[in-house]
Length: 348
Image (cartoon, rainbow, N blue to C red):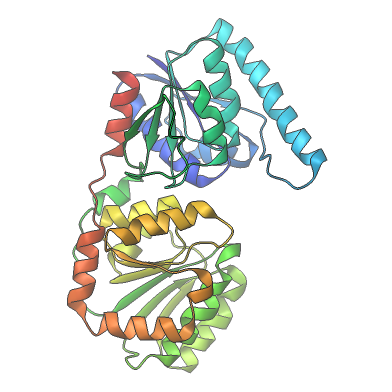
């Protein structure tokens, strides 16, 4: 089969798409991956060796400026026209799109030529681009069992598949908790400053400071946090990038971080309790955190309630009761066969 994979925008859309592309290529299918300029290098570096790569013109239409909104819509329209023409001469047997505005044009072009199209939603609340393109697909695949925002009267078939994760995350599935009291803090992005402010302040207030902290932060904050932990005799490893995220999660008894879909599903795949602080301008993250907390695997804490006092008391209670951390890890654990399920759906 010739299969077109549409992705782009952010790593959250691209990494699941690349995992599916690897499996489809391994099964002998001819794969083409389309993406926009923002993730061009990411796709080139991670695509299967024989995959074809196509680039589409796209950007988000959520800008406040009317001019930018018009420009974004024009880009999508031009890309759609180009793909309609391309599919006239080289039509794929199936299309799978991983959301984001870079998927709109490929999905529309597939609809024009009646190509079977599958849409994947990464979050526990459906995104704007996916909600818009649902009118042109027959199957919506989801990362979470329940997804907010799907229209009640939709005729689209909804299938819970899970979210594809990297091979090293799958290899760490159901890893036992380590001995000791190890805390992993995953910040590093522009929206994670609150983690850099609240977590160290909370640790200073803890009664039990015998923990080891791995703290990922923005590059400009590394020296400040290293000094803060060292001055207060707190064992810590502060770094701006974690190359082996699977190993970092495996080595942790508890994780504190944001609640992007990839983060949540990685925690569920490995099996780790967590304190999740959704980005307050992102309803998708709030839905992801709520879904995780509902399993009993951890806490979903609104940003305004994520205070040093609350966090210090919570960390003391958790690290003083290792059995509770064990229970949280077991409740968080979810089997992840997403790649196989998605590929079976596309090719059956």
